[in-house]
Structures are given as structure tokens and as C-alpha cells.
Image (cartoon, rainbow, N blue to C red; front, side, top):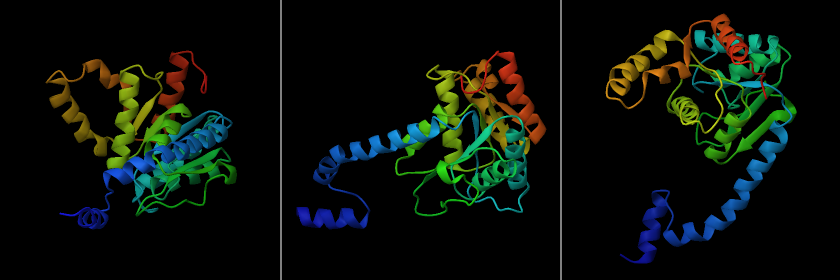
Length: 236
């Protein structure tokens, strides 16, 4: 097979040749750097915030959409702003609730082939867009004082387990992680207990790294109790 034939096949598959990859790597560093700089500059000024994660596919009539909006609203009434992925679904609900509560409403969007677009409830000066998932995830962890995790798909699971892993391995300080919806998360919790703990892959104490709740009141209460218990102040 000639190099031209290989290139044509790779182009059809959305892949690049090794030489193309090498030639683009150095320039990508500058784009990555610019995303970090912009993120640090804007988010360092937002004050105490809690990230809300969940599916982009959740519709406004869904009970979890309404619950996410209520949680976001109550967060603003307790001195927190809200950070979301900036898109539709649960993210939109989170920003909408923060906007309704007249609190800080941040959107960290990312360019995707489907689903993702900015929702209209983000503060004008707190609307960031990323090309790189890993830069975006750093921003969530660095500038959040807690995670509210609503039902979602692979992206939500990714964000949840990254946060738990970073805390478990003490790469970051501990902050509260709240999973909302016992019915949704119950099966995962059972698997964690029956498989991960049973086979010794994690310790039973690791279950204390997160809390499962059903209501907005339970979620907010856990956040407030966490900071009171550890004598911490959000954003410190």
C-alpha cells in the first residue's frame, strides 16, 4: 500500500498519519496553554461555586431537570454559585436555577459533534469554550467547592469517577460529592459494594467519599454539614 493510499484510508476514518500528528503536536501546546490561561483568569474571580453534572439529553419536563434547577437555586441561596458544562439538559437546568436565584452562573462548554451548545442562562462574562476535555476537567476540579451529580451518561460517569479518584489518591483536597437519585444510582452502588469492595479493589471507607440523596434539601444540607464538620470555608 502506498503512502497516498494509507492517507486516503486514514482520512476516511478520521485519523491522521504519524507525520501529521508529529507536525501538529508542538503547535497544539500553544492552544492548550491559551485555554488554561483564559480559564484561570476568568474562573479565579467567580467565588465559591458548586459544579452540577448530568445528561445533556434530559428534557425540561423531566423530573431530574426540575430537581437540578431547584438544587441550583438553593445553592445560590446558600452563598454558592453554579458551574455546569454550559450545554442543554441538566446543564441548562443548573444555570437556569442559578440565574433565577441571582447567583453566579458559569458555563464551561466544549465543542462536540452533537448535543452540545451554549444554554441561555449563563452569565455573559462567565461563558468559556474549550477544545480539550482535559483542560475543561481541570477547571471543574480547581474551581468547584463541591459536585452535584445528576443522572447522566458516559461523560457524567467520567467526571464523577475522576473527582473520586483524585480525592481517594489525595491529589486534591477533599470536597463533597453528592449523587442525586437513589433509584438511578442504586444499581451502581450495589455493583461497587458487591464487586469492587468484595474483590478488594477499593476499601469500604471509600464509600464515604460521596453521598446519595433524593431531594434538593438533602443535597444542600450535605454540602453545608461538610464544611461545618471540617471547619472549612468554600474556596479556601
